[in-house]
Length: 558
Picture 1 (spheres, one colour):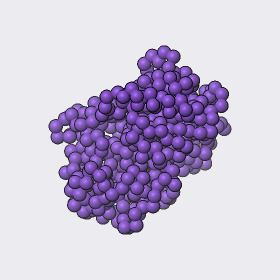
Picture 2 (cartoon, one colour):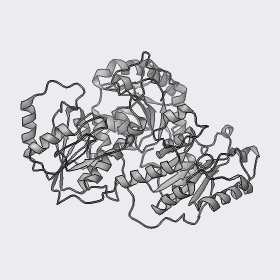
Picture 3 (cartoon, one colour):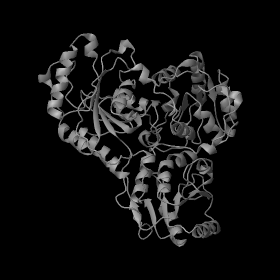
Picture 4 (spheres, one colour):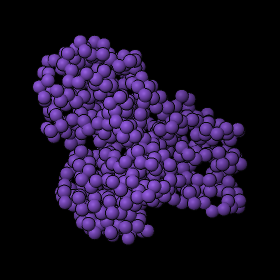
């Protein structure tokens, strides 16, 4: 959803049962947290034992540890709401008064909630509030005085997580015996039980809050992210956090990330240099080139260096060069023993989204985002050119079938069918790709789209994405451009890397593809399984349905 557009559910959720003007659950005034304002919780199977179509308060049984876990959230200043599908109302199994009696019993056992949001419909009603539709999440965020991106939803089935994602909220799956394996595979964040989910919410919240300021003033900070464009983009919030505490920020990046580096707010100077221990296709190590880089870094007069890496990369080779360049204060994530190479050795559990992973390192180095900056991806407005006038009015759907890693690309025959289905549903489709993807984009666009293959650089693509109603894309840079523009994403996500780390961040998203395919977690750049099964079975009609879930209509409207 575009950040400057009206929330469609302000107009479309009037049938949601909402408990307005409730007493506070006990939150107290405190400095604004970086990540979350509120926790939304499914009712049956998450807060209380699942008794099908229960209208009897005497049958309410909290799940183990629920009261203590909720009290931890209240003590941390987070607001709480229940978001629950109750089709028993539509089917006549119980009435509204019985449901309210059940809710009163839940509060008697678990404490007060700031809001109750209930969908009273059945699947056949086609409402906008029944999970996996995002209507309840939008309604809860409004009632709690926040936005979906500052909410995290805890539930026990895939519908809960899908509703959270479709609104741009974080979703935590707490599986029960009724949770299907494919739902567990597709979830980006899984916890063993409600107390574990709460513990991780609070841990992530605390991890991006500095415990101590930097040692001494930071006149010039060196930040490092030497990887692809998407990697640089997801590091943007952390770089802005460092910029908030430094007079000047110099970014060291590689050639593959330079175009993205040019788009980031908070960067004053860019040094471009390939790092052979990061580049996926490195040439031989050139000692003279590394000596030149070391000398150049030494001339920058750096007060502090913060080395951002992906979860499978090492910061230590560069830390050695930084020490040789005379830089005294270096922070990085390192599971390996760093010896005297790091002043701040930070560690992050597996599964944390890459933007939050980087934010936690910035916090360990003493930096946080200011209160008026959200932990979302952003681009410099002055770095994005005007969109080409010949593309017509905004409101089209962008389909980007390619990827630098072929394992994450949408098979051309599938992308072609998707274009056909979208145009049949009334969508105007622009097919984008790089100069080396012109043959693919021409083939795909022939099904009814406009071929833009090779016509734009990254900044020009950002301009096109910003005026889209939605972007259909795999795990590649344009997905993060969409997140930076607040544009909804239909994510054709190959599971070679974890979705919870690399999925579109804090933007309404529907994930498609086989999350349990054999390529899962292989980090393969080329598909290791014949037939590309994770994406080859994507149904084009599911893409059309995903756009409806995201409130993107045919004809360019939203």
